[in-house]
Image (tube, rainbow, N blue to C red; front, side, top):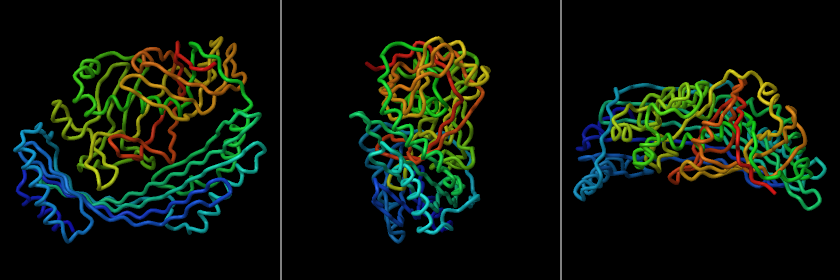
Length: 457
């Protein structure tokens, strides 16, 4: 395989050519209410060729390795046609070629767990949620995917890489006096199936959260000091700030280039944000990106100041910056684009959660995420669970807490960052450019934000 792919890439007749081949096997299980809705074992094989001629791309996919030589020629023809049409020219930032073999190093391999055992394990969690009074329905989904990936380019890079990805998420829906609410639990990772065991208490809590939230009062809308738990804070930094830091979003928007000018201050000196592919075992772990670039820890904000962004070779070349190992593709059907890996807010100097809330007379403790959306620098998120804070103490549960604002104002309004950093992994993923769900993770300690607009009654 190595000789074949490397030789085809080098003699493609392009300024640059890369070939990617994937062989993936997935197990998926889904419960809906009392029913085992789906059990699936699937195999996917395919690849792509990406060629650059005179600064323009040609991209072709294939499912038969025997057609690869003709697919390379087709990709080059497409690139030449794009160049002849005077389309926008690409400049690839230079990187050192690498040759590496990356084998799996698993703590507990899901392939060694029988399908029957997986069904019993996750079915048991589903039954626990259904057993709680007030719970009217549930859903639970699990998957594991093993991928063997080969990558070669015309510059001499060769990668033979194995990867595992696992995720599971379940939720309970409760209805009390005509009010419906949801509670959830999730887990994910790349190295340890045993992380999915022993989750009985977490699913009991998911069911209890659903029932108690359905009984809770709707929050009164207004402006509050908000404490975000590590999961919601991680969602915020990923969705509201991380996407703005992706190189294509900056390179294609002149206004954002001015707003996100390196060296600009966005928060207090205790605010630190980074994105990394180096955290082994997390779903955001990635030793090499999908352009064959070694990943790294990339600082985005350091001591309150903007110091970096997330690049592919193409966006780094366009902006005169260095690649960061963030070029990612969902699978062989897509070309790589700048995407996050594990995006985090670092620990701060403000102690514990109790230290953050002790001076809050009236505020909200927002936990977990039940979805949201972003539009440029504007964002709206819904907390999965929430409580009032009164006189420095967590008080009554509330529901329908929607948090909105401008990301840059919100970063400036962070007045406290605790030291209890935590990473949340789950079964979902990141969506961008039609590529969903890409495995990512996010982490943060508890954070305190002043003057947050809360939607409610």
